[in-house]
Image 1 (cartoon, rainbow, N blue to C red):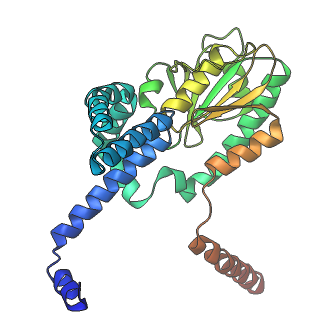
Image 2: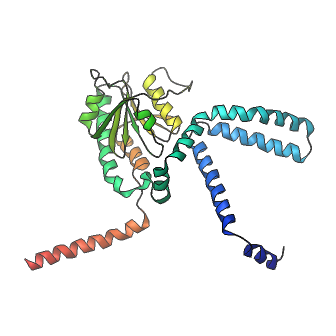
Image 3: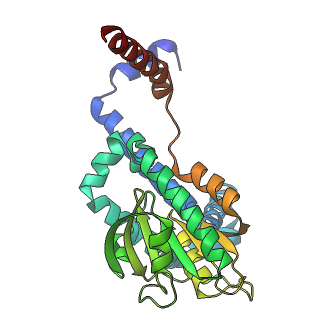
Length: 293
């Protein structure tokens, strides 16, 4: 293909074609991101392997392999719809939330600088509470909402709008209170609900010292991008569930570092550049005020 033909094809490129490409790329990117955040990622990789074998069999005319792959694909499509049912449902729910679509186009909650202060205070309170609950062997389950909307989970509990502090969390999970058996949902650094019911994981590799709280914490981490903190009532061990994986034996410091990395938005280059300018302006204003006196 000559350079002139490339230029000619480019000149015939319409804005509608660009829009078409952007939409398809966005859908593929969203689907890949959704698959990567869930426990069904391995199943998706298996499906891609089957499609690759199907393409090879078709290219090299491997009749038996092609027939076998064709049969698997025909029934496999229905199986994938059943397996990915929670993810498909969540994707459709998110598509219907137009306000969140608008926020995603301009600024997501995850990287909103205004939430840094709230999350920092909440993380300190959560770590303090987890340490105290661990020392007293008080069972606890705390879910930190991120991008995935957990409103359906919130509706199963008692709505709250409270600051996060160790005393409130300690009261909620105290054995004599009505809400101690459920999960606390924290959104944007605030307690949104308590006593919530979470989906249980079907993972069969659970240890004997882990019970329903751990299975519930792993379940919400499998079905969303939320982070679940579990304090064992039997052993006092602090665990963290994220992306379908349960990590154990956290202390206050390691839990604090993990939550800082996961929840505190990183400063952008523009914000870092603004810091010296703001500091200089504050210094000059203070100096000016002192001179006027």
